[in-house]
Amino acid sequence: MDKWIDFFKQYFPDMQAVEHFVNKCESLTPSDSNHKAKIMLHQTQRLISIADDLPTLRPKRESLQLLFLIVCAEHISKLHYGFKGEGQSRKYVKRFFDKFLLQPEKDHLGNCFFTGNSTTMAPVGIEKVVDILYNVRCDVVHEGKYWAFTFHDGHTPMVNVDPDVIVYITFKELRDIVVKGCIRVIEDKLKP
Image 1 (cartoon, rainbow, N blue to C red):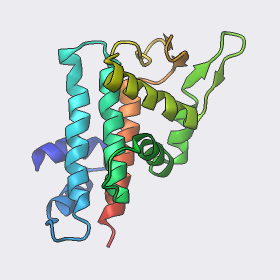
Image 2: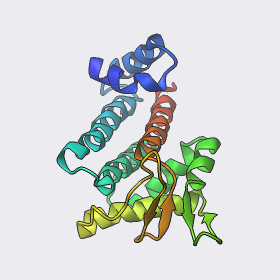
Image 3: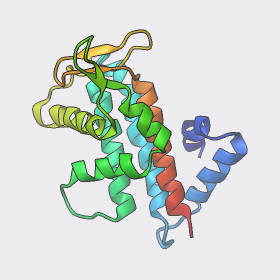
């Protein structure tokens, strides 16, 4: 259980809270009606950890890291809604960002992606941001294009060409938003 606690502890106010959260999930058995919460806990840690580890294999390839964040959001959303078929990935990614992010997170994310030039720059809004992120995921999955998208580096916003957007959010900030959304989904599934 240490790896789950270590992964999630930064998102809880104290060790007691994270231990309670993880223990509640880990105690679930396949016969429990909310067993999906345990699967979600495991999948969130696994998929986000892969994204975290990718820079050691392919430095400065944030499109690859983003792929695993989006796969995580999609998978958690599909599990939550009980989707068992194939396809409809974009729909479930959008649903994740719409239903499981808090409004301040949506606002922040929507205000961190800009289009236009220096005199006409405007934030694109949350719906367009989710489309951009999903399209980058598709470029990686379907085209093998994993080098074209870059997040803010902590000092400088990044100008991307395809998609044509200036990004004012770091990968870590987006990662944290996704993990917090996953925690909310898991907590929702834990309810009796």
